[in-house]
Length: 572
Ligand code: ATP
Ligand code: MG
Image (cartoon, rainbow, N blue to C red; front, side, top):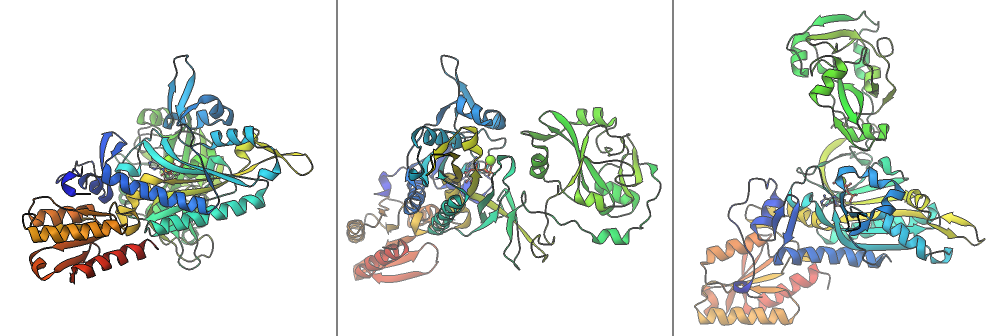
């Protein structure tokens, strides 16, 4: 393709809402445009890469023996009602009605639909195991769409579902998907780690996420370099800090009410009481499906909402607003405490380790000192509720863990019989007996994977595509398009590479070379061949986007080198 004819609307400035490199670059390089919050169009360059990511995933799914099909995005409510997820999805599900007033949704994920399809068509054990997949558009009305296509409201997911006779079969299907995921992400040039994930309200016997380590990742992962343990923060079990208990006085002291006007935050409390945040306990008020509950963690800790949500088994969990907090505690925000509180209260394991600590008094302007769990208040449950932090003991081996941010690009999940039980997806075994199929589900976000590749492969000048997913492999840049010799050589390189199956563009725009180089760096084409002032000697410049160094080659050498570069990267 000739660049003069291509639709590559590059930008100098991007909207301020683009906070991260991949979002900025996808706009700047003309890969996509925003239509509405969390909704994007892919433009030609972006769509080429998108299709390459998709194709890599497709090839790896096929290699693993999965079969591709495609299902509708517009789905009837009944099957989601049967599984219970019509309610579970809550406001994240886009819902609509047809002209007959029947309920539909735009599919956020397709477990139910695959289960129903297989149930209606598969009866015998002989058909199992079977793994089906699709690469299809999903809709989720995310609470906070952000970071471009990293978290959008319309996105393409490769979703696969495995059907087995038993758990042992599921283990094998799951492992095949695990390997296919590793191969897919390796081929996309991603540096990732696999972490244990929470099976949460979905039930199931195991789950792992593929995380691309990145500071901008919304997921938090804990990993141990000593034993290889890795989990996301929702799953990572925190070991309570016992050290503190020993230096506290062992006897329980009488509760004291202390006037603390205008002392609300932990920081202010530390100054006022002249002690560490470890000697306070925070009482947080939540609304769980409309019901008010309280949760406690040590003053220096953060509560993990997924851990609380899993314990409560609720669908929607949100911090209560100030008005609700006041009506429950009888005090302004900042003075909530567990003593005398008349709602369900869940405490973190560490709160049970604390002695004589400070809490809000449920009275504006007062705190209580020397409070102790069980003596002064009771918790309905004492569980792990807090976020793991760097240096916490590894739950497996005790060595200090590291904590990093990650972008979740893929998720594999042993569902077991949750959906087959709910939707009666059974098969007949050798003895003619009915058994539920044992299922797994496996998702990769195609758009998010593409953005993650950019997040890991860019510099100040733009994107640095790995060859495998670059929109084009090579760009040929004649420095002066009015110089007929330069153009002749550029055309020759262009057509020879094209004939060899290399995806090549020719920057035939009548622009200053600086402008062309800038644009080509921005869109991140891996190989650049520049035809300039040494054209008369048959010499061209050869440069890789990822290395900075410019080499001089004869025309034939440059063509041969570009072919070699492309073929070897693509394993041809
Ligand atoms: P997250 O925790 O980021 O919301 P999730 O747990 O909801 O993800 P899954 O339901 O497991 O995600 O979906 C499978 C894959 O789909 C994810 O690993 C991710 O790559 C992708 N994905 C999920 N939600 C979005 C979204 N809003 N935008 C883009 N990709 C998404
Ligand atoms: Mg989500």
